[in-house]
Structures are given as C-alpha cells and as structure tokens.
Length: 141
Length: 118
Image (cartoon, rainbow over all chains, first blue to last red):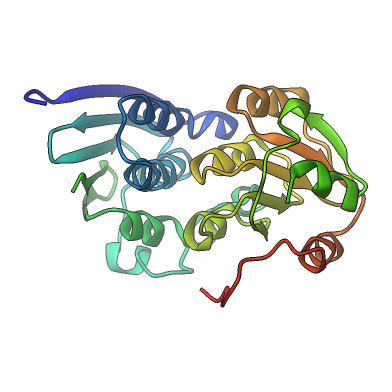
C-alpha cells in the first residue's frame, strides 16, 4: 500500500441518536479492506467514543481518517467550547456531561480514558472558546 | 449457548434477526452504561441492558457482539430495530429484571471460564 486512503465525515452535533454513524462507516470500510479484527475494533471504539464526545460537548464537527501502510490516523476537529483542563478531563469518572446524556449511557467520565486505552498515540489540541482537535494513531503492526 | 436458548431461558420475544437464532454466544455482560461496555468488555457475545436508544446497537456493533437483550420489558422503537437489522444484531426483549436475567443466563452456563475481574 503506497498511498494513504483518506476518509472524511461530517459529524452532526444536533442529534445524539445519529452519533456513531461515522465510526460505524469506518469500521465497515476497514473490515472490507481486510484489516485485522483486533485493529478494527481498536479504531472503532476509540473513534466512536471521540465522536460521541464531539456530539455531547462540541455540537459536532468533522472526522478525517487516513489509512497508511503502517498506521491509521483519526483526526476529529470541532469548534466547540474547548477543554479548560485536559489533565482533569482525562481522569476516569470526571465528566461535565449533562444528566440527559448520562441517561443515554454515556457521560460517566470514561470517554477520554477509553480513547487513550484503545489508541497507540493520542494528542489533544484545545483552546477554550475555539475548539478541540483530537488526533489518534493506531499502529497496524 | 445459542441465541435461541437465551430466548427460551429468558422467556423473551425476538424483535429482529430471527434467522440468526442459531448463532452461538460464549458470554454476556449486563450494563446500562455504554462507556463501561466499551471499556471493560472482552469478547462478550451478548449485551443485557435497560436502555433502548440507538447507541446500544452501535455499541454492540463496535464490540462485535451478536445480540442485545432488553430487560424489564423494554422495547426500542422502529428506527432502533431497523438499525439492528441492518447491522445483523439480534434483539430480544424479556420481562425479567437485569439482575434476574443475568443470573438465569449465568446459572445456565453462559459465563467465561476463569476470572472475569477487570
């Protein structure tokens, strides 16, 4: 595989019920391309949690996925309120999600820790009032 | 254990993907917190939950699960059933509460050998 395969998705922030559509599409695509099941699962879970976060906290955004010979890079970009304290946000159990989201099965402060757990590398670039870019790398080897 | 046996043990109704009733599952988990399912579940075949939103189906898809049992008589709407159909996820609904439903399946032999601690 010499060139990267790129996928681009718009994540609708207005409807929680559609959250996860981009991750599902990526999972199906990677499966079809014959990527190893354990890698596909890591990508799917990490991206799904990040996509859910984007809908809950930032009103949606875009997701770009790039498949190269040695890694998969997922970049999620939003123009939401940003994360004031990334270290605190990374703590298991810490959450600023509203109760309505908790009643839907998310928002218990496991999102970012889960994303980190299933990624080989994770970078968060955030500015309060401007937005957040989360970059995830999953190695293929 | 086949999904058809789970259906029988829980006196459940099948909401979709009846044709997959012969699918084998080797373990299960019960949770209403999808992030916990994503964080801690390993190779579990079926999810028991009281939530009926589309994220239960998406979580099951991400985890390569085979089916979902909605407890306490819960039934999802047509859009969720349609999403499960597209995804090949069997949906069951039982009147048993979560604790009882999990207990019935566990005592019938649906559990992972060895420690199931996180």
